[in-house]
Length: 323
Image (cartoon, rainbow, N blue to C red):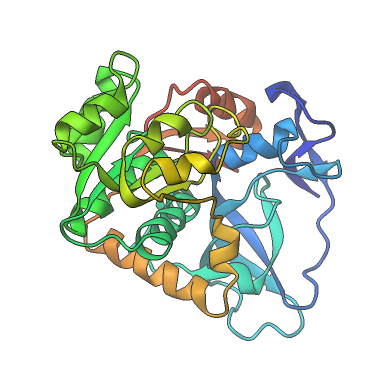
């Protein structure tokens, strides 16, 4: 038996049940991990609320770090005692779990469990956004929404390191300071300013090469107005709700724009890509180009409190659960 957070029906934070579950031996190709830290993400809320439907009951959570305590048949790349981390595969909010070995990466001693749990999902997301979905290069101008959030702070730091001019949007003056410190050259408080108008002013009408938007419904239309002709709108999250259907003709009118809705799962599932992405992420973290900010640590039993804080946008940086 291990303690875990399970969802028996879709709903608010109150549906997160802290309870005992049976944990079987790892199956073929699986590894069993004693978890040391677990990441908290908006993705967890999407599953909890039913936006991403799952057959209940299920253990919520897609990110964590810990130690290998058992390996199943056919596992060759990991052994008992290895420090590991992962992003993907439900079952994270638990003291221990089984996970396919193909979803794991080895964790160097230079990176703590807390940091790994806070950075894997967000950091790998930033990696595919900046290095694959749109390959940011020196001289680009990029717009990052929710620039003081977990993914946003990484995008600002990494974008600056790549030589881009980073424009960030935030919801408060306090968050503006964090985004600025993380590398955003310009910061827009969208609660007091029209961000599309300000982007046009900041860029002197040249607009942005790419917009990274994890907010969704509230920012989508305005984001299109921030793009230069042939620019790319990358919608990778729904913090304000899913984007409504829209007229594709708008993309032609605004300069033959590109719009994409990528996922980490698609990129990390490409053969050999997860290991490459993880190496890229761990290098920029080890080199100090990207610092992972952890704004809160909660006991596993208080997962609901962590999600309430995240959903209420009261957080800056990442949240982790400690089993």
